[in-house]
Amino acid sequence: MIVTPQTFRFDQPLPLRSGAVLPAYELVVETYGTLNAERSNAVLVCHALNASHHVAGLHADAQGQPLARSEGWWHNMIGPGKPLDTDQYFVIGVNNLGSCFGSTGPTHTNPATGQPWGADFPVVTVEDWVDAQARLLDVMGIQTLAAVMGGSLGGMQTLSWTLQYPERVRHAVVVASAPNLTAENIAFNEVARRAIVTDPDFHGGHYLREGTLPRRGLRIARMIGHITYLSDDVMNEKFGRKLRAVDGEDPVAVAELAYRYSTQDVEFQIESYLRYQGDKFSEYFDANTYLLITRALDYFDPAREHGGSLSTALARARAKFLLISFTTDWRFSPARSREIVKALLENGRDVTYAEIDAPHGHDAFLLDDPRYHQAVRAYFAHTVRASVGGK
Image (cartoon, rainbow, N blue to C red; front, side, top):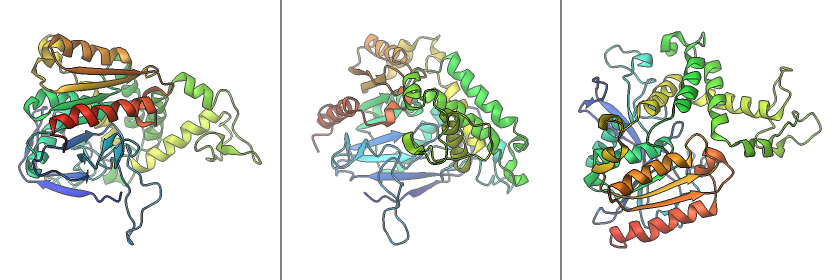
């Protein structure tokens, strides 16, 4: 499935929750499948922290041939015959505002100064992203979504959709997510942000104007984050206390362990693996984007305006829900999903909940667990499909 991104320009300013206003902006989008005549089979997929609009399929080179390793980040979930079947549904992936994968963000030009936005890009929230996505659907002529779906931060956007535009969402699929971040999660985000802002090449967030990039800070931020995405069991199984592979040995016993450092301070495979992940991330992700998106994660808390009552906050929701969690996900634990389930049931909502016993930690929502995929497949094939007339 070859896919090509599209860019939608919006000339009407977007009011933000911070009180700021974002002037004309662009959103980068990919779509998969065909929108039916009734426009009733659209599914919006919301992305997590370091993902993008490229949800599924492959990109092509100049000759139209598939590019190697260009699969979308949820390629195993979305496509013809997959759990979210694009033979049945019209799937939309949107790159969020403030990102660094095409939609207007800190690396773009601030029309007021002619310089990159950098640290001057306005604060954005999950609710702002949902408002921008709603405007996109208006332009696409889609009034009601068959479903909104997302994992992690994407799950927060999904939940917010059911509260901001309850009449526009029939089903919500929330995977490995939470109604807000715990203090521990906020702490991890803050340590990662401090690594970035204290990098000498950060220059107060205006590093592009200075011709630098805070790669060291981004490397550390990614290493911290990556540790939290894996379970202790997976780390021990993959790496344990193994020393770094030496010349003559096969270094690909663990993913990406072919990576080599000239320094002598990398002794364990886990060190090599984390440094590889950090270096790779620092080459393609923007530091200001990382700061913006982790703040959006921290700020999300729909219960705050209701005296801390999640049940009261979710009273607005009208959608039917599928929630999925993973037993070893300690960053977005099953207990957090069960909080959402409880609050929805207190409001008499239709809820399906699956708690998958999987060893992979938070990253499980991106992996090929057959029980997980079957739960999603069954929900779309039966519950969601019934609401679009089986078309």
